[in-house]
Image (tube, rainbow, N blue to C red):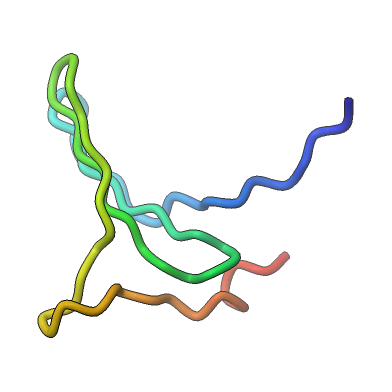
Amino acid sequence: MAKTEDRFVKTYSQGTINVTEIWVDKQTGINYLFHASGYSGGLTVLLNRDGTPVVTTVSKYDA
């Protein structure tokens, strides 16, 4: 089976035990915040001040 192109790209990463990352969906441009600490973690949509999702220009990640 051929490898398909990844839909998400990691744009930011910080930490080793307490990990914080930002992932961008290359199809929609929506940014997600991922945080993990020890054996637990969570993922949520990254929001602007007005409550709308943070959107990155999708063409930036087209390759």
